[in-house]
Amino acid sequence: MTKLGGVKGFHDILPPGGAHFTELETRLCRVLAAYHYDEIRTPVAERTELFARTLGETTDIVEKEMYTFDDRDGSSLTLRPEGTAPVVRAAVDGDLAQREQVLKLFYLGPMFRRERPQRGRSRQFHQIGVELIGRDDPLADAEIVTLLADCLAAAGVTGTQLVLNSLGDATCRPSYRAALAAYGEAHVERLCANCRQRLARNPLRLLDCKEEGCRRIMADAPLVTDHLCAPCRTHFAEVERLLAAAEVPFTVNPRLVRGLDYYVRTAFEVLAPNLGAQNAVAGGGRYDGLVAVLGGPPLAGIGFAIGLERLLMAAGAPELDLRPEVDVIPLTDDAAAVALQLARRLRLAGTRCELEACGRSVRSAMRRADKLGAHFALLVGEDELRARRATLRDMRRQVDHRLAVALDAAGPELAGTIRELAEGAHEAFEAAPEGRLK
Ligand code: HAM
Image (cartoon, rainbow, N blue to C red; front, side, top):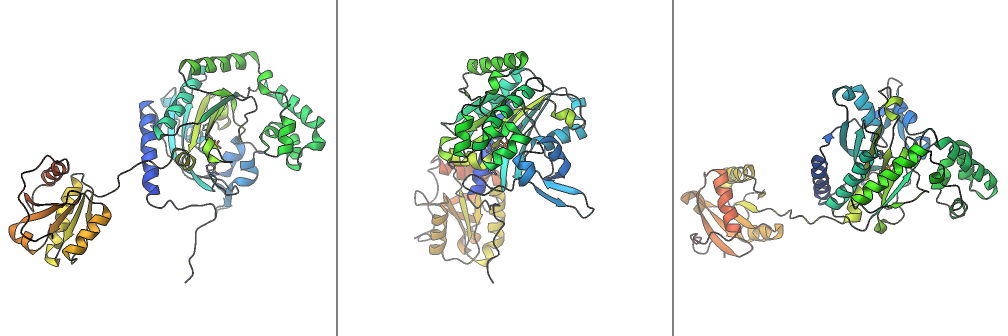
């Protein structure tokens, strides 16, 4: 039979990658708990209208990257391309805003975008994201950005660049949009085909074009920061002041735009220099108005999402000791039941244990324990069954112990003794029976 293979752009996370993801998530969740955020889980599929209504009809995501399909009852469903719209929908559906004035939610899980796969970009990827709903003050923006900086530090990533911009709001954005459209019209001959379309539908996206010719033209385009209304300008200045006071390094790039249309005022991205073309590790911003668009009260909101695959690439694999502490080895079939119990008791006491199949020779069992990198091999053979005491070999120090606890000893006692031995605190153990482990 030929191999079946997976789906293009959908990747397996093979060992030890799974442990690396878990470690990263654990570190980030610790920071989120310290900031007093609650976890929310939403389904991977939503009604298509959710994203069409919130992300923007003319965004790349809605126009060409969503996994959309008809359910058997004819309704259109979409695999979530991002987490903000689903979280806001769930908060509105669950009437969460009636329980709490301010919602502090985080989520973790796979997102789906049908982009062209390349290094750092896949069609299924994972985000950890946060949404702070019900706050419109600059301190909320500063705290969110600080949280992002602390998450990145906890992940062990260094050398990243935090880029900030203000995109204005419903008052000042229209005049900026018009200025940008007028600039684009004046240079339409030299714009790429894509940008000509963008010009008519969503001129802000002109700033996002990767074509060299367009980038050169847009370098002289009007800047959003020159078009902000007074309240937006004051808000942004206060965010900058608070971040400087918190000693969170950032730069302002007035050409930063985001790939989603729900943003107003503060928007930001974190770039990692070692990632190549797909160098955004995280992105976010303010989305006042989104809650109301989804039928909820007129609440403000701000959040961000970190791409976990990119974060792992930027930070490098965390150093983890995944070796078992104990390799439990039943030398004969008769030892199977006792070995199973020993391993289980040790495991329940928190000791990482491997349990081998019966019937290995002592020599091959030692080779295997060595290959696993186990600190100890715990042997149960005929002698041990007779004496009701197991033989423990310290694989790292090459010392044999006859474990001075009964085979039916309680797990914590067993685990405690093994831990003491590992720490070298136990010298007074009997030697193993002659010749056993030679
Ligand atoms: P986003 O910038 O579209 O924002 O995505 C956030 C992060 O997800 C990116 O910076 C990147 O690390 C990762 N990412 C996006 N697409 C891919 C891909 N195809 N492959 C690998 N990683 C990817 C949002 O999704 C917003 N919902 C963030 C937000 C939350 N804004 C407010 N609240």
